[in-house]
Image (cartoon, rainbow, N blue to C red; front, top):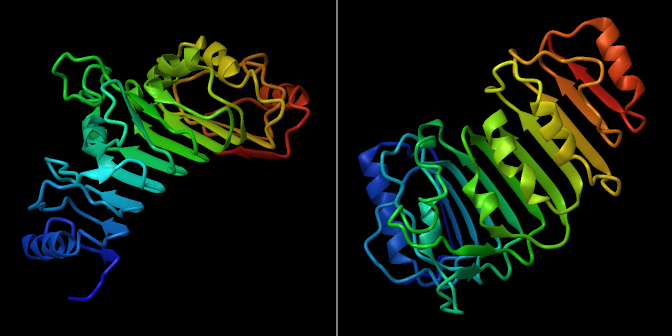
Length: 278
């Protein structure tokens, strides 16, 4: 039998024949598999963890059930998950510590998670890690993490709330609504060389969201690149709304008056790039 370490099947989506083929390949070579790329959910036949899996990219697409392979948490180096329906897939990771209150990802350097818009009701603190059965959620420890990207959140981000992050990262990119930014304001994110906060919809014209944004950018003096994207068309922007002098990149995708723009950028002394999308 050949030693296949990578399975990559593109363009599968919901084709049952392709899904069956992909599932057969993944299960057949599970023992030596190091890289897994899938554009659909996977039909899994075995309950044993993938012992050598290091790099995972799964796009669940429009699948109603996001079946996830069991993996050893200390082996994973990069994790990219798109269109997932919640955070319950963290239960698929087996930690060698066999600790009841935490899972340690010793070598994980990249997390890129884009939730499905259909995941709104499933992204709750009670559902992460234990499927909402009432047990205390486990803490997710990422001591080697370098890049953290999370997007398409509408209500909250339990992943961030239950993560133990390193003292600093290379990049943190967060795309979420006003509700999401309010839910993580108290977390005191670690400093990163590149920090991006993108505000989507949901402010309901409540300008107090700028206080949240300013707090999230409070400790960015050592950041090399600090980006703020404002995409909520209902959010009025005033001259003194943004009090983040360390911003280097500002993108505004709402209507804004000329005098407001000029007043804003006069206080952003590190600004090198301005984008206006009217």
